[in-house]
Amino acid sequence: MKNETGMRQIKIFDTTLRDGEQAPGASLDVEQKIKLAHRLAALGVDTIEPGFPISSPGDFQAVQRISREIQGVEICGFARAVKADIDSAIRATRDAERRRLHMFLSSSNIHLDFQLKKTRAEVVSLAREMVSYAKQFVDEVEFSPMDATRTGDEFLFEVLEAVIEEGATILNIPDTVGFALPEEYGAMFTRVMKGVRGSDRVEFSAHCHNDLGMAVANSLAAIQAGVTHVEVTVNGVGERAGNCSLEELAMALATRGEHFGVKTNIRPEEIYATSQMVSRMMGSPIAFNKPIVGRNAFQHEAGIHQDGLLKNRNTYEIMDPERLGIPRSMIVLGKHSGRHALRHRVAEFGVELNNEQLEELYAAFKEKADRQKTVHDHELMQLAGQAVDRALE
Ligand code: KIV
Ligand code: ZN
Image (cartoon, rainbow, N blue to C red; front, side):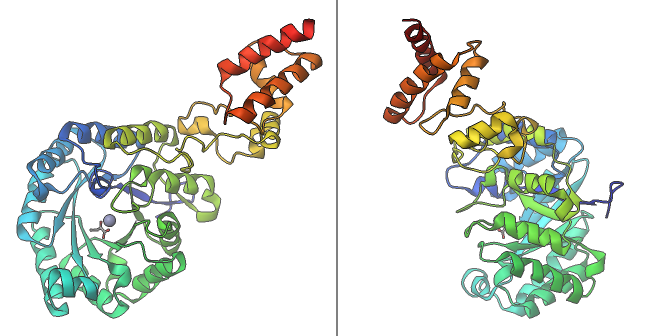
């Protein structure tokens, strides 16, 4: 549906606390999940999946407390196609202002043969039975055919048609193993939306893993094909190479909104603080070159780049880091830095250099920068002081 700006609204479903927490060593306790859920609400996500209630008493409690405490955001309980899982998710989310049940069941041959050990007929019948069971308790039922991108159309359509008939309202079609290419993933949604009976009665959702580094590109392709929900995690955390990164997707849509014709409710100014909190709590460092939130994402070392930036930041930046809640980038000074950047940086500390002093500083700086990777501000100011003295001699 288009909003008043003519842009289609994309709902951001955050699964940092469920799928994201499946990253090795990233587990969170109840209090941490509650703190993060408040942060995610401030960030503007539409849905939070806070955990897998049947998986542990702690996860049940986290989902229950988040359902009680967080207002204005839909809370989602996660379940296998198993009655006990559904009961647990329904109980845990009972007090939520708005809630959804997310049920998954594998659909690919390899999962059916080696994991579920069920025939296709058994899977369809179980999917029907469990969706119909869940619908007694909750209106919004999301169904995910796990490993959908390695399931042929014929069976995928059969499963999707069956769950639509039983009342599923959101069809999430996951690229569980991060195998799809963007054009394939987009085309799959196009075929499903056209070919699956009843598809006009449901909404579609993308869920991408990053094994080939294509989770964001695949999610964008799904948006172009018409999905209205996208499942993401902060910093792209998750099983193996992780999930579609919330901040990368949100900023791709914000920066290239005219291309996609869509918008989200994400508040960019909350991105950096949220990313830092997730990294800290999960003990999961952010790669220096990670887009949007990495340490180097807005840092510029090359002299030509620094010179351009000092004249107009748009020369080498396509986003304003301050808009993302990132303190205005400190240009990194290193052996590629030029005179202009040096003069500008020392001026920021209140020292104006004449040309002779600048030449002194430049020579000393290059020598130091050759020896060490970067030159810190305190070292630079020391060199600047010496340069001023030498120029007076
Ligand atoms: O990757 C996946 O398939 C999932 C689902 C269960 C949605 O996380
Ligand atoms: Zn997943």
